[in-house]
Structure formats: structure tokens, C-alpha cells
Image (cartoon, rainbow, N blue to C red):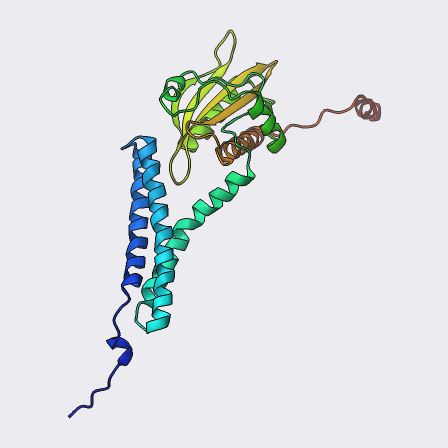
Length: 282
């Protein structure tokens, strides 16, 4: 007859608090995913979508508190459930890490949402203006002097792009980069005579939540060369957490790189002294 061994640990009941902690963590994940889908696909208005998102984060915090209570209970009565507590803590840590980072950015970065290379005469939102006229949206009109001053202090490198190419070429390079980024182009007007001013208006999305941020680009002639001005503004919220500045800075870098790479190699012109010396040798 086989001998049976007793397993005292397995006979202990599983902590109900540990189970609740795990279940709340799983529910929080589902709620966050649902809220992201709501925002990205526009199933509901912004306020209900954000309420769902913050409710999910609240569930994650509650899950951690219940998990701590479950840990104290297990420590006292020796019941099972540590695996469920650890799983809940892992899920909640992953879920809350990015919002915690954004909270730090909110405290550190300026409370502005409208970034442009030309604060004096920023590119206008024309085709996009009707999309920024709803309830709760930021105005299509430039944010003004306070925003310009905050931008100058915090993002001093954001300036007009000056290119040694004609406006048409600058327009083509910029439009190709906008298309490559898969921004939704709302309006595109090449720099036609007589004014030769080109315009591009597009909608970009933030990486995770997919919040809409509007972009207006203006290409103007500067003699035989051209100038490119960019404006990027969040459609919602009074602080963009640096997303618009990052977008504008990266686009400036890519425009300069694309134009420089497309330039044909040119020989440096000889100075008059070198040209005379060369002719004297002949």
C-alpha cells in the first residue's frame, strides 16, 4: 500500500484578499485597453473616455492596497495567495509606470499646448479650424504671448527652417516626411505663383492614447531659397507634456537632413588669387 504524505501548506485556504487584488489588477488592464480604444476610434466623447481611463488607474491603486492587506493577512494566519499578490503587483507596476512618468513631466514642463517656429506670425489653422471649434477643444487661434515666452525659455532651438532650395522642392520634401509619418493630411497646397506660398495641414496622434494634435506647415519663398515654418498644437488639454515640441524639433531635423542629402556635390569656387596663380602657371 502506497504511503500518503500530508501537505499542510496546500490544505490552507487561499486568501480572499489576494484573489481580489489579482482580479482588480486584471480588471484595470481591461479598462485601460477599453479606454485607449475609445479615444483612438472616437466611440465616445473625450470626457467619458478619460473617466474610464482614470477609473482604471484607480482600480490599479486599489488593487495594490488590497494586495498589501492580503500580504499582512497571510503573514499572520499563514494562508496561501502570495503568487496572486505578486502577479497583481507586477500588473499594477506596469500599468502605473507610464502615468507616473507623465505626472513627473507635467510638474517639470511648461503648461503650454501650442508650439511654433514663428510666434510673431504662426502658420494658421484653416482647414483644421472647424475641428477645433467643438466643446472642450483648444482654439484655432495661436495661444499668444505667454505661450511664446514659455516656448522661448524651454525650447530655444525651435526656429524657422531656412533652406537653400526653391519653395517647390522644400514643399515636396516636407510633404514626403509628413506622409512617411502617416499623419492624416487634411489640406495640401503647393507653392503656386504669384505668391508661391505652400501649406500643409495634418493631424498627428500621440503614441499610446492617440490624442489628436494638429499640425500646420507654411513654405514661403526667400529669394531663390525658402523658409519653412511649423506649428503643432494639441486639440485638448492645457499642457501637452512636451509632445508638440518633440514633434516640431524632429520634423525640423528631418527636413534639414533630407534637403542636405539631396544636394548634389558641388566644387568649391576658386578664389581670385588661386585662379590668377593657376593661369600664370599656364
